Structure formats: structure tokens, C-alpha cells
Length: 482
Image (tube, rainbow, N blue to C red; front, side):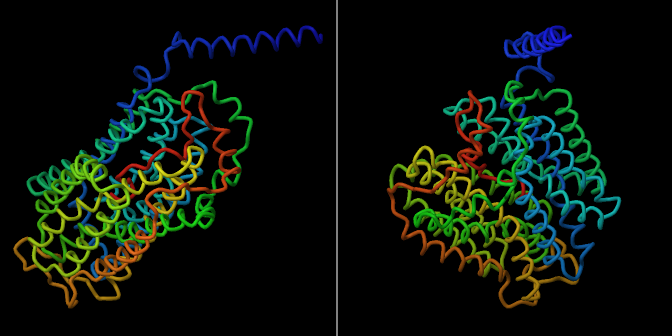
């Protein structure tokens, strides 16, 4: 009886090993169309944010109609709750995707992120409530970047991440203008139906065409090991901030500069529509121009500056442009001022890539993930705090409207003396970031005690993916900023 059991066990293990060997040798086709590739991730990102981009103009109208008295405050609270939930849930979803695979969590994040879309015309209250709660799963970028890390070598990863970020930007360059045109000609209901159809197409694409990227041979150890609290703790990386003075300076700079940027992303297009009197088409054109200029700034201009004036000076220059941009937004009372400040805003987008490059050049190889993880955690926290802070400042300064302005109405119809008080607050915050950044040395060795972190990352590293999960550079554009 004992021999029979041993033989049965051996045959079962042989069958399992044979199946895995065939999968590794591609004798058994993976579920999906073709082998896992960056193009699968690119299509998923493009469809999701193209659907949301279509709703840019209708969302601004529905937001004011639903909350006519406290539009900016409620917008800040909605986006703030969404950002905080994303910050809290991102590490857990990342750890679970290491166990259950990327495809299932791509499906989960895209489904819940796009779930509010059809509710816009059914029930606006439910629409905004579901947007807030969807922050728990609004981390598609995190899963997509893990998907890309599974299927690329370390030297290919930067180009692959750049392709994903560029696709995100491209979807937002085109879709708001298309949505505004269709809404003006055929009505917002058609735009909502079209966005819903594109979201469903994205879900179907993941189900049918996207193959699993996580190698099956990595599953057994993961399945047997429970997920620890350290893996799911969103504040784990932030606890190491004070362990090195240079790291502390970099993290303070990132916090003070990205907090107003996150708040600006959440409210600026609403500000253009309601306070500055921009039409839906003008807002869409503004997004397109700003997106194109930002792509140019983050590629051509950034590389030229890094070679000519160095890393630290590039950061200082980017912060200077951000101060000018926010001050211009704050005092600007004419539409042309917004367009001019938008060009400056594109130049200010070089700050974070320059910070990431500074960290990657000065940190030791085994410290990259720790410091990049801290910066990513701070940016995630700002995505929650920034929108709520901006909404609260708008509320304090009574920047509200009694009616939605039409394109021909005069801009600056607010009762506030300063048209955009939160932007001036943001300029002061970035000025402090600039003063802190002056003390960051150009060349140094970052040293952060990271034994527990490295042990955690080592349990999930792939043989073909030597870079730890925390080392993946954050995309230049975040999904929580839409």
C-alpha cells in the first residue's frame, strides 16, 4: 500500500513537471493570443484611458450639476478618497498579483476602474460614489508595470516603460477632443455609451487576447507562502525615509513639489471650464497641446539639460518652471495666460524624471528599490492629499459658481480677489521644495538599511527579471491623475 502511494505520488509529480516543461518550451500554448508582450500592456492602457478621456467634458458638466454649491470641494474629496484608497491598496494588489498572476488582476483593476462610466447618465450620485470607492482597484499602472517587468530584461525595461507612458499620454491627447466634439454634435449620452463600449472592449481583450506573463514555475513557492503585513503595508517604504539625510532631502523635495501637482491635476480642467470660461473644445485642445509639449520636454529637452547642466541643476530648473507656472495659474485672469502657463507647465514636467535619474545614479545597486519605493510611496500619498487640499482651499476662498459659464461668458467670474488661491499655495510649497533641493549633493552614496525590504523582494524575484519590484521606475503619468 505504501509503495502504491509513493508510485502514485511520483506519477502525479511527473505529470505536473511535464506540463510545466511543455509550457516553458512553448509546446502548450499559453492562454491568450501569442506570447506575452509589451504590446498587450500598451493596448490595455490605451483602451482604458481613451474611454476615460472621452468623458473629460461630460464629467465637468455633471460634476457641477450634481454639486452646484461646492463643486471644487466635492471634486477634491472624491479624487482625494480615490487617491488615498489607491495608495493603501497598491502594495496588497501587487503582492497578490505575484501569487495569482497578472492577468486576473489586470481584469480586476480595469473592470472596477471603468465600472463608474455607465453610471454617469443613470445616477450621477452613484457615479461619483463608485469613482471614490474604485480607488481600491484603480492601480492598473502598477499591474501593467509588473506585467512588463515579467517579460522584459533589465536593459529593455526603461524603453518598455516609456512606451507604456507614451501610450497613456497619446490616449489623453486625442480622446478629450473626440469626446467634446461628439458631445456637442450628438449629445453626452452617446459619449457615455461609446466610452462604456470601449471599456467593455478592453475587458474582452484582457479575457481573450492577453496571455499570463508570470511564469508558472514561480507559483509553487508563492502559493505556499502567506502574504505578510510588510508586503501589504503602504507605509513600509515611508518608514525608512529618515535613515539617510540625503534620502530625507530628496523625499521632502518630492513631497513639497508633487503635493500641489496632484491637486492641480484633479481640479485644473474644472477650473478652466468654470472659472476661466473655457469651452469643452478649448479644454480638450488645452489637454492635447499640454500633452504633446510634455512628451517633448520629457524626452528631447530633458536629455539635453541632463547632459549640459547636470542632474541637480535640471531638478532646480524644473522646480523653477513649476513655481512660475503655478503663480501664473493663480494670478491669471485671461484665457491667453492659461495657455502661456500651460507651456511653462510642460517644462516643469522634467522634475520627477530628473529626481529618479539622480536617485538611480547616486544610490548603490542594492539600494535602488528602497529609495525608488520611498519616492513612489510619497507620490501615492500626495495623490490622495493633494486633491482634497486643493478642494478645501477653493472652499475657504469661496471660489464657487452659481451657474455653469457658457463659452461666451466672461472669465474670472469668481468673487475671490485671487482667481486661483490653491495654485498660489502650490507655488509657495514648490518654493520650499526648491530651497530644500539646493542642499541635495550632486554626487553621493545613498545608504538605507533595507535587509527586511530585500528579503521581501527576494521572495518574488524572477530569474529573468533581476530587478526587484520596487526598482521599476514609476510612470511619468499616473492613472490616479486622470
